[in-house]
Length: 314
Image (cartoon, rainbow, N blue to C red; front, side):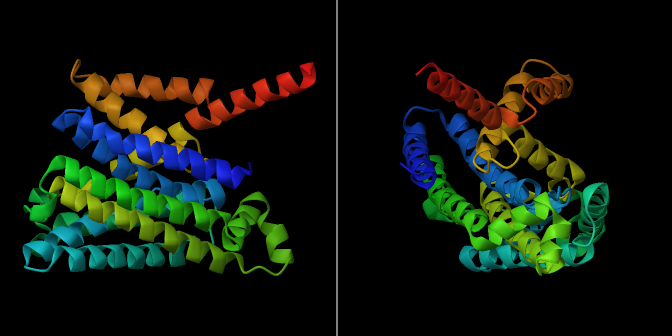
């Protein structure tokens, strides 16, 4: 069995198991599972850059939130949910393209700080453009279509979309273009010497990444029915990046493991103590020390050791 076939098989099993969850979970837990799927897509979009292009973005929370704003605003103005979702994703892709134009010629900490600054600009616009964004009060509206009111039905629809998007991202990073991004990550100068247009590849990669972040943001609009400047704030970008790191940078599907770990910890710990952020911080520090490659990366490393030890014994 090839690695691709193995990955698809594991993915199909994971989707089948996930589809059964609403049958055994409470309504509240189904809501958490839906949130995990949404933020898993956001973390995967970040991993396209961080894991495969060597660029860590702190602006994806803003790109995610732009889609949420557009969807809720348009639906509240009378547009159809499908049209609003499409426009939200398009708006996120456009914002990502603008970010990319300004950021792709930088790398390392400069890329990180520039995307942070661009995200802060979006946050400032959402905070001050009160006629459209509602300012600090945000936008609220019961925008979810009637057919998706049931929590289980909505979860299954989100799961189906997540499966399609995950497959699309997986194919993207395994395509010749995705392999070029890996080459840029490993040695940018060598890729230039081979004749590749590095800024153009990074621009396209960033825009595609923003497109998928917009998909997550659009779905989040129907899930939350509310958006405020906190949705585009730095904390949103940091949380998405943490999900990527906890799951394992470059593992792609580890994004869902990271999203599940963080969202579950947030809800469990916050229900027991007001200092839940301190507990989460300590947990993340321990993960970084004990499993710097992320949870999925750590499991892969352990399985590799077991496999090598068996081979050496035989």
